[in-house]
Length: 441
Image 1 (cartoon, rainbow, N blue to C red):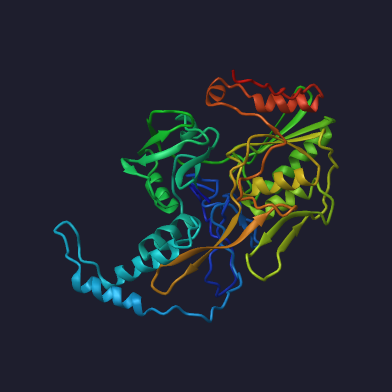
Image 2 (spheres, rainbow, N blue to C red; image 1 turned 135 degrees about the horizontal axis):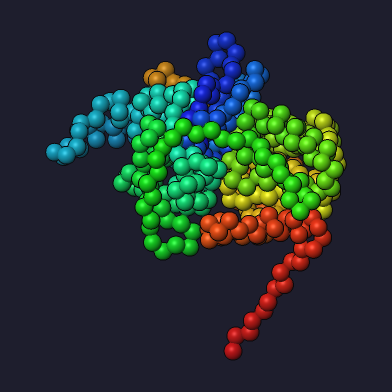
């Protein structure tokens, strides 16, 4: 199971909602990006359009999601028996404090929610719920990276370009062992967010275990206000390259301009680079797919895990050009999450692009934030995303058609075998590595 949250500096991140609505929408995606024009918990930051959007990233809070009535109630006799026994028999240590009834109840609710074994589903006591509300509506600073939970470990999905995180040498796949001396073992993503973000100019100290490393390394990162780019274009070896950094409210417009630039360039081949893209608005992924896929083709299936029918999202058919797999490559890696996985999966499964790189992150579920009367809140998974062919994005992510690893050493040396493989493939000179066999003697 994977959860991502973005830690960043956001401005007015709460999505528009109808009068009287008490549910906040928030994007899921994987992620901790502390950034200004980025997204938090999957919510991409930018100029929000005035229509209700469904974020596709770490925390997606869907307004108006159906409520499932439950008629069966558990027999709580044993619960209250244990409650009374604890009050009667527990010996308070000199180092511990006496819990109030409210604190005991919050602990019980937390245990109930934790028993569902879903890192995306979290009970937020009033103090944490208030903090979370500030995160999605206020301004804050961070380090410019996205983190998620992978194998119950706080893991960096990707640092954003030209941010303190990237400049400090943090890389996709790095495991955060501790934050300012606090171990992350068993830590919830929300707690990690609270520890990593902070005032601009202050330092957060991270103990990091990199992939294939045997020793921890300590990295100090200076927090800053961060702006995330949306799209960058370039031409290399006659191939037009669009780098899409996020799926925020302006991504569709930026991608439309980039694709028109591609058409006017008279280039015949296209690379869409979504490595390190943590996702964002689901609607942006569907809209961008619509510039490549004809009307009516399935971009994504949303499954609710019960008797309700799947919700199917289809291309709107604003197609600029029909691509063949040998004309278009999509680059993905372990930092490609949420909406990036949605778009990559759709283009691949409908045979419009060849995927090159490494397995994507695997962030494919939707969360709803429900406010409770006590001031607490429940963030609960209400749906999961499937590719057009019905494959769960959360089940291992999206696999590339051509697997190419880019090592940390190659990143530091500014070597990019994934991009070079994409260029070779589009020019028809790519040769797949031949398998070698060995015989034990």
